Length: 69
Ligand code: SF4
Ligand code: SF4
Image 1: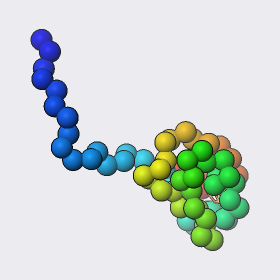
Image 2: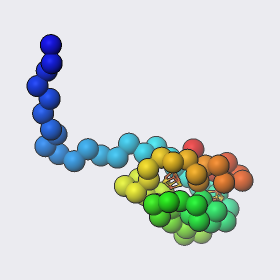
Image 3: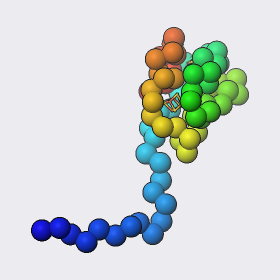
Image 4: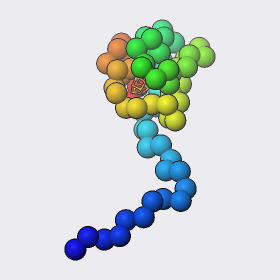
């Protein structure tokens, strides 16, 4: 039997868990350059905006020091 599905009344928070390990990041900017949604900002090291990230994984593949996970 189908249940009545209602829409949420509050915005659903983003579920992005991709974070930059600040102790590993060398601030090279490679992740920011491949991000299709401009979700990565570099301020000496990289930071991911969870509101913009679409989980494409591109930044993870280009990071030579494996700082994103
Ligand atoms: S690619 Fe890796 S090392 Fe380079 S800025 Fe991004 S997270 Fe830091
Ligand atoms: S997973 Fe994709 S969208 Fe998210 S920060 Fe990395 S490159 Fe950008």
